[in-house]
Image 1 (cartoon, one colour):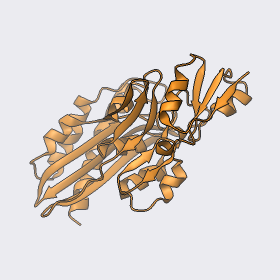
Image 2 (cartoon, one colour; image 1 turned 120 degrees about the horizontal axis):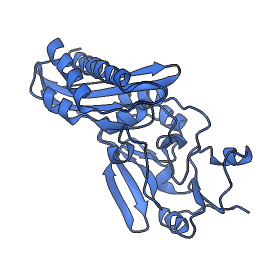
Image 3 (spheres, helix red, strand yellow; image 1 turned 90 degrees about the vertical axis):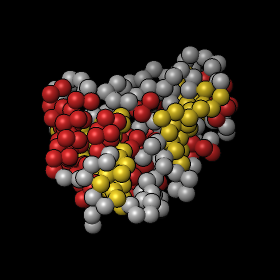
Image 4 (cartoon, helix red, strand yellow; image 1 turned 60 degrees about the horizontal axis):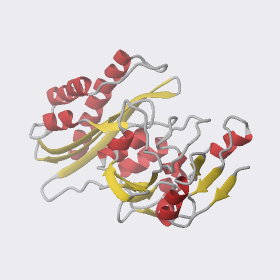
Length: 284
């Protein structure tokens, strides 16, 4: 018989995870319980609910904190968030029937295989850090360490994602800020996404954050692309170079949505278009 416990602190929740191997975390819109009712998933001995843990349910635009159990509709309605994040939340796509096991997730889905990469790519591009709790304590790690693409998202055993801290880009004096992302969908499944956040001084790119994602909710920083852009004037040749560099830097795999070559074509094109659009936004 399954027992459900609803701890009020993250420390209590992690302690419960260490009591048995037959345990699952539920919360944040997870489909685990529904799949159990439908007989798709064997009921575990212990369910640990995280909906009463303050950090996991908190959404704070002032500090850039997004609790891991915050529902996407709450994030969509929140005020004072970067426009780029709001658009990504609006377009975040979820393919049904994917259970979330052993982890709390943004909207119940961010770390589950089954959603769009657009939201993950935006969070990575905004210097997102994941706050985790394990039996050894709390730690913050770059979000791409968890959401790195093309590997599948994963958390260590007995670990819960509490939330994500983002740093919204700010244009300093004398600079202009532009941000954009592009996503390609094939047969209802995302083939790729690219995000560019630039600051420009005059016609020169001063800083660049570029993230690339694939068909599951994973994304990585394209650091070679970023290095290629910094210090250059924005023009079609530079945008094309950014796309070519992304194609050389990112190493996607074949799957049932698209071949590796198709993904590379998407990575190159979407990166080029995202960088060009982000630069154009600084000129408006």
